[in-house]
Image 1 (cartoon, rainbow over the protein chains, first blue to last red):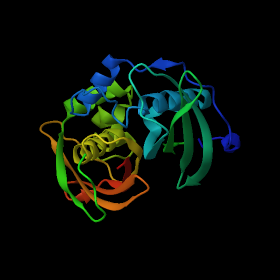
Image 2 (spheres, chains in turn red, blue):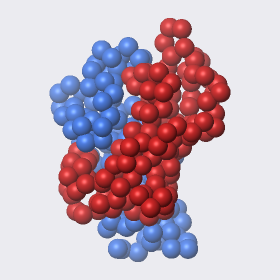
Image 3 (cartoon, one colour):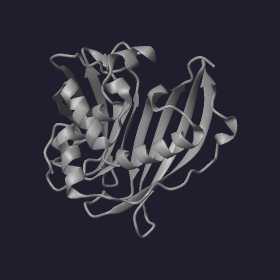
Image 4 (tube, chains in turn purple, brown):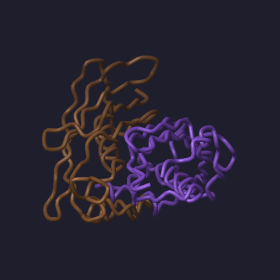
Length: 132
Length: 132
């Protein structure tokens, strides 16, 4: 089933605030085969972006297993630090259909507890609809 | 950090990826998509088998950047996920990350990456910008 094409420009509710704990950063650093050195790996904000994507998928009743991650680009206003409390807000930036798949462009703005933008995470999600 | 110069060719970094790594990455990143765990689900959406999270591959690119720059602050990081990294049930595949310094200007170094698995590029236009 194709995605509703009125989605473009729609902003979804912010994700629950998530504290960047040393434990979560250590787990992430080790899961990518490295070691925790006090810094936060640059792809760590995907944890927030994933929360935001899940909020969007739930709202639109889309199945995660039908989603392929097509592109991801982060731009950082400052490094993420342990102790930050962050929340992500996803906006659908673009939508097109190619060969039965929906190509969904999203931007998740990740803010800290003071409301300052820390990171923008742009993702392209490819939704394969399966049998309509 | 070692000063990056335009045109520098950076030392290729090699990272093995196993199914166990995918389980660890799924837990640490909060991405339970079964296409990264379950052969049957992966094939049902047209994939050749269980694939690594694109974000794990991008995280490995981030580790290469950190190694080259002695952990310089990352200002931008991103890529398209153009070809899947198929991870066998037993053993591992190797992801290779190569990089060339494209420019150094205004305190920022732009590194063009090339990320391959079994001789094939797996990321499209992977790029990092760090504070130089």
